[in-house]
Length: 302
Image (cartoon, rainbow, N blue to C red; front, side, top):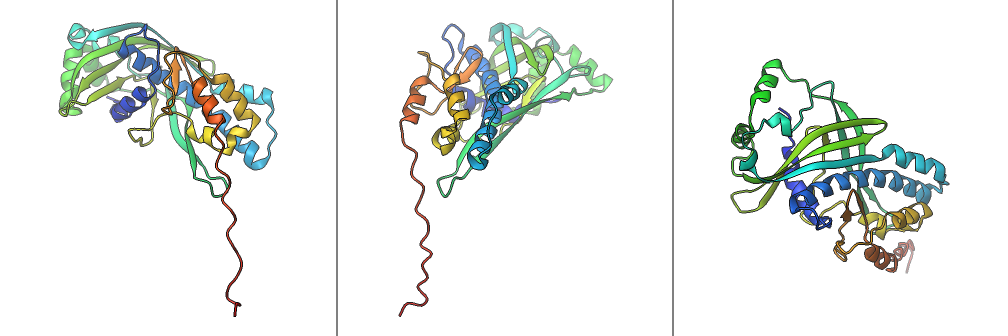
């Protein structure tokens, strides 16, 4: 059965770095909501980042109507509802397939391919930012015997198998189960998913996303990495109208924003750079271009 285990460590780092949601939600619900909001954000970053590169490096004129159409085509709308959080023991006797919808046909999977764009501008330090591109993929066909076995498993049984095969040193203690309604390119999918929260043998928090119908493949992240578009903010790309206008339109002013830490502010179903951070960054000059190398030959000097 398909698993999202490769996401576990990355999810912990990403969501905690960008965690600035409303305090009206539980911590677990905040973390889950932030993950989906970031996925929607980086698909927009892909479009506007590409446009800024074309404008700056090639002098390409950006038509606003075309750009708006591209942003709309890349937009993912996630609506998360019916949250339940609590101790894993409270749901031990529920069927696993009732809280974690499987990706069997005719269902399709929304796959978000996550990559890192780099940009080196005339010898300045290389800038980079994370971006995403989504597409619908065919669901996973399970053998009849496997599907029958999965349909019969309870949460307790599934977690026992989970720990035995994949995470033997992790003990999951709490959960956040919810319903996802995702809309992308005129196609809608409604399903159930769950995040598991626990600790490993070192006492470190582990968060395991069990969403079979929206997946993504993060690149290698360091503990300080997030989806914060630092390269777009600190390079000359920010001087292009297409990017400066978009950053301004996406900024978020909210008491929950963590400022001065290079973290996205995520509130509700959207993410952006905090108003205070954006103001500070844009007021900070970009380092000047390094001077050209001295090409004077010394071979003929006497």
